[in-house]
Length: 614
Image (cartoon, rainbow, N blue to C red; front, side, top):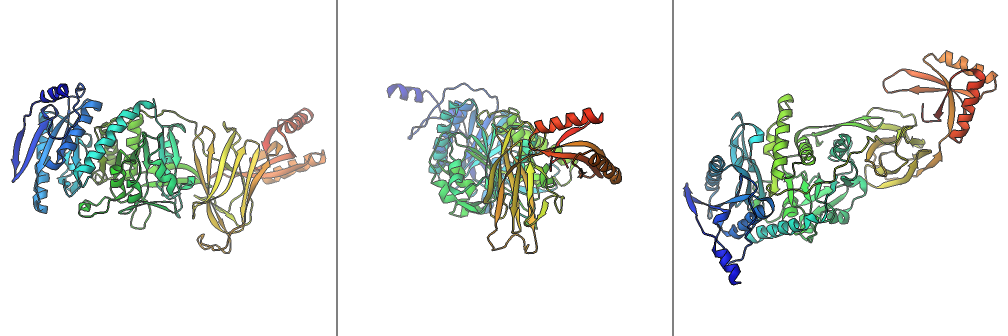
């Protein structure tokens, strides 16, 4: 104890008091911290960064501020400047003046030392958001981002985070949670990313937050080992949702879920902030990226925690949350994510706004920007580049973001893998409408098969009702299988297919009939599904002119071949009329028939799969 006291007393206190508009801002460096009545850890780790973090806090949050300064030095090698705000019971206008003073002081510190990050301790009532102007001075914003933005290019902005604690105890508890996580994070050399989707693609359109997951897979940034999926179409329920927030094998999550003041919604399930606050700590706490909630800047006046606040303040949920903005437009659709489909198969996903910013953050993370502030800087820079090319990308998207957490902290290295492109199963049945979502009549057999050149031996297929999120059929489909599905009741469905050690794919189709009423029928549908083996045939010619194909068929029939004509129409093209013969149960029998034809007729032939290569 004497040795510890001697060590602690070796630190001296040097405090500069700056007065602005009647409020006091006390500035301390981490090396200036003198231990007081409550024991706070003191780090002797070397500083590895030239720039410093700035921690802004009320005097009653002093111990929590010192704890965060310890974390910065001990685990990140960053020196901290502690900026104490003596505001008292200030009026709204006084708080606005205090916010301006804090911003000016941070600007001064950045010029003198270089500021890496800013951390605000306290909710918006204790440390208000600050008003600032856009780069062209045409628009004013009120946001946390203003504490780190002083004009110029977006990448020059300092990353700002907030611990939205209503009292010192909550802030101190979050620091303890961070400390525990830093101590535990090395038990795995690499971590997967768990993505949690929202409504299970249950809307009329496909402008759902889960589509961003497809975009990540599409770009090959991370393969199946790096990104795991858990969401509405995966059969997620409240219990699984809450458990995922404290899994011991997930370090960072995409959680893009619509939410209100105190509730997160995914599929037909809800989780409230009270449930989140009851979670217990586990080693693999995630970083949560963007739960699609609008964070009210005046929320400090309310007792109820928002779900983003609860995730950060909870002992067993997130270490960081990105939040802010409105994910829907006036018609109620998500305007940031657009999908291009062909016969229900996702071909491409285009992003804009906040979703594009989140994608850039993810790119930066996988490129090695492990510190949150570095990834944010890279994302802002890339987004600004898009903004110059596309008028609809506005800078207020960035101003609208609030990062709950400490941007000084680093995320663990994620698993880095790449996987081949997988577009899902091939549609075999002729559909009524092939644009966007494929449409089939009720009671028809809808057939799907693996592509002929698939590198995967089998895929797990689930058919999900897009209206309810319920799985209505499930099978493992191999290369030699046809998957058949039928229902007597109109509805909206989705194939959720997943190869072993491969990426996910989503395909969408609607079933319509006379009773179609938007998929809201109360009649319990009769659904049938199953597998049948693929059969093979020998194709001897293909022609643009139908009469020529018919003549070829007749000549073959005269020679004893069981010939027939199949019409094949490729996307956007004219029909081909293919002449084939036979339906063989194995490819070996088809090969023998093909060899016999070539030897006898002195002509080329090829083997095709019946019903599929049409």
